Amino acid sequence: MSGRVRVLATKLGLDGHDRGLRLIAHELRDSGVEVIFLGVATRPEEAARAAVDEDVDAIAVSLLSGSHLAHVGKLLATLKTFDADIPVVCGGLIPERDVQALLDLGVHSVCPVGVPVRRAGAMILEAVDPAVSRS
Image (tube, rainbow, N blue to C red; front, side, top):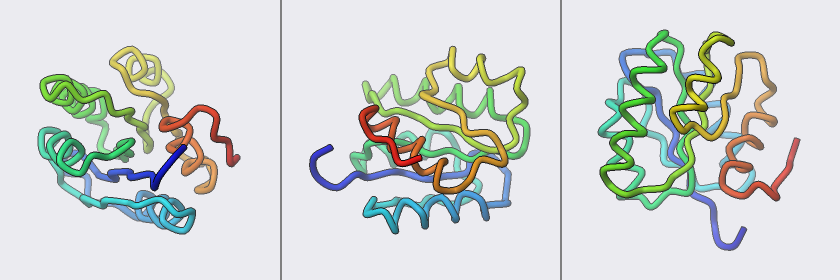
């Protein structure tokens, strides 16, 4: 990886619990990553536009509301309209049965609940550069 990595971190939809995403954002920041934190209640279209405008290397999405397939699907579709090839890593309360569906939509990887913060940060960096491994 050359240059400083930039990651957009956001919560899509009406989910307001952002503690886990904040912890991961801090982990990334402490590792030298520039984090653009959109916070809670972001619409997928807003997140896609911000990712393109900020020229980020990856998007970290946290979802706890159960609307992950709809929101992430809309995010990925909007990124395509911008012709943006930005890897998306999802985390949160995502049932095992939906992991493959998210991957099939085009998500780079899914970080399940309970993964250590350091590993979650590494998963995001691996989306930017597969040669990176900080586990």
